[in-house]
Amino acid sequence: MTASDMNYITVALPKGKLFGPAAKMLMELGYAPEDLRENSRKLVITNETGKMHFIITKPADLPTYVEYGAADIGIIGKDVLLEDSKDVYELMDLKFGFCRMMVAVPQSLQREKLSDYAHMRVATKYPRIAQGFFHSQGIQVEIIKLNGSIELAPMVGLAEIIVDLVETGRTLRENNLVEVAEIHPATARFIANRVSFKMKSARINRLLGQLKEKLESGCPDAKV
Ligand code: PRP
Image (cartoon, rainbow, N blue to C red; front, side):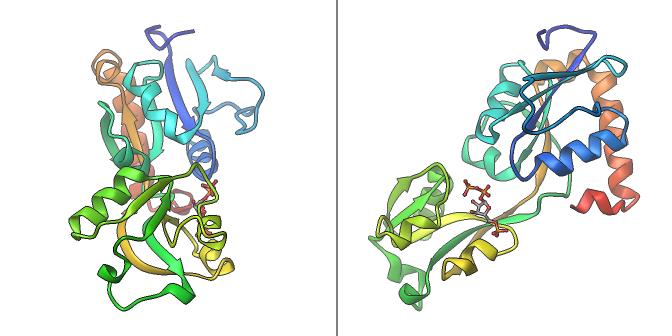
């Protein structure tokens, strides 16, 4: 199975928070098979009737699969696209998975101005976004790249500050962290490989049209 097979569309879906709403949306449009599960042991799940393959990847890897054409299209958070810009078409804001990229600190370290955090350490899964933000503010900080559970870093003295996604705010609250600045909001995006978008334009555009219609109909599922 390769995405160069003109008879099939290969769709990449990310593990994690976006998987549920993305799979649900595709199921409701009749594209995703019943056995499409985030934790499936099967790495490629095929919908023979709809001529679609589905692959499930780590979010950070997903744009790479699409850039190289191993997947024709994909659904991924804007945060991932901003952190690691890839040569893909970003075709639609799917308006679900809403969250915010935030700077947060322990309550006890809260200061008046952002510049008061100069020369501190910032733990994050998003080093480019974090560096870019502090640089744009003229504030020098040390960035420490982590791969998850970022909120742990200030609790154990690895860093004073974190830059991370906030969805409900629960993780911050439960770890006595407070938001001090918003970097940007993020939602799920529909992306496509540049060649696939030309070669398989009819099918991709049809899917885009259906997604657009679903969003415009104000379907509550689209806002999951
Ligand atoms: C994300 C993010 C925060 C949390 C925010 O982590 O990095 O930790 O969700 O959500 P909340 O505001 O609703 O609490 P994720 O669960 O993706 O895992 P990770 O910590 O391994 O990155």
